[in-house]
Length: 79
Image 1 (tube, helix red, strand yellow):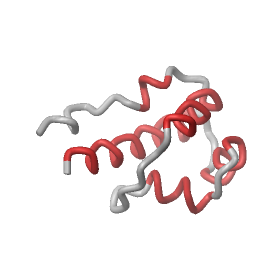
Image 2 (spheres, rainbow, N blue to C red; image 1 turned 30 degrees about the vertical axis):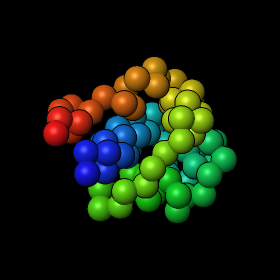
Image 3 (tube, helix red, strand yellow; image 1 turned 135 degrees about the vertical axis):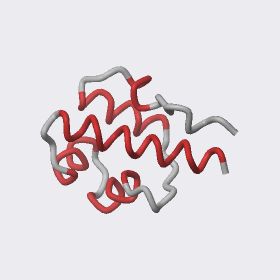
Image 4 (cartoon, rainbow, N blue to C red; image 1 turned 45 degrees about the horizontal axis):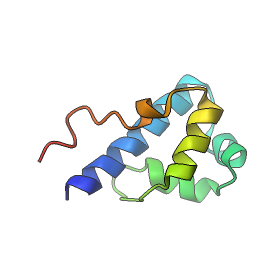
């Protein structure tokens, strides 16, 4: 579905900005109070893992980016 593609793109975006900040999955997960397995599932392109706004806000705050960057779909939201 279109939303599946959006969640996968959010995962890509989180991974991109996490790596840009030189954070491991373990460290980011710890900072936003989720398990590494949960973050791994969010970032995995073959897994559709819906993300709450609360978690997106926490991730953006830790990564020191505007939350809108995590919601940039690069055309993935086109039907």
